[in-house]
Image 1 (cartoon, rainbow, N blue to C red):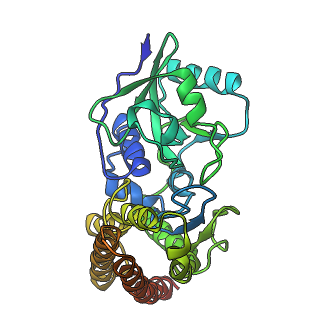
Image 2: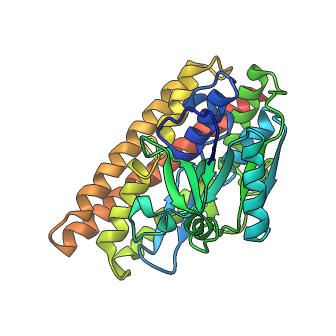
Length: 332
């Protein structure tokens, strides 16, 4: 068996927990909330899915992990698209060299989740291997998990939500190249720009889903058709989970951004921190509206709950737009 001397910890979100576990391993001195903010981690992506629950959204960008390494100028390699044998050989070699490997998965294929729902990408760290097994550090479980290598292969090759083909990231030299204060400002500006004008920032959001504030607006307009979906109550329940569960850190990831602003000395002022806190609280309220609607006994109550949540989200989109514009204005 090969296993790193690695200190596993759980956290609020898979990506930022994996990054904070790396930060502890390499002694970077960054907690999860700071890792999230430095990754320009707040975002939005709306998906239409072929299968149940037919609609989904993330309150984070697909570029979160990539942005972290670039913003802090950490030497690393990111690979995707190689065949499995080449990928697994490289993963094991990196571990032999003393480096955990950040991988991107679909939880459907990870047996310890015991779920029939696809959800990807879910990021975690491979921290060891044994004969026919991989040892995984997953944010949602108290102890590292052992899985058959065949299951990890399936999880890293998924066509659900964001398609995956053996994508992984590994540090090559654990040195932070960027000044932390500069990184805080740059990461926050990138977050605001990507929310207001997705596709104009440093990181390509890709062609899957609708991103940024446009994604929130598409969600609002799409909700009018949810009663015509095959199982609207499950779609609404899943939407609640996208806000408050499934590793969001609370408030559709806005709670993590709030705590980042509270943890660092950022240059955008206390008003920005307070407004982010209020927005996080309002998203949590949206989650409660969705949860209650999903538990309705009658179609009329379900429809009314969907309409109420759509109105709340519409107002939040306007509020978020003003906040992100204020960040850009203060940075210019």
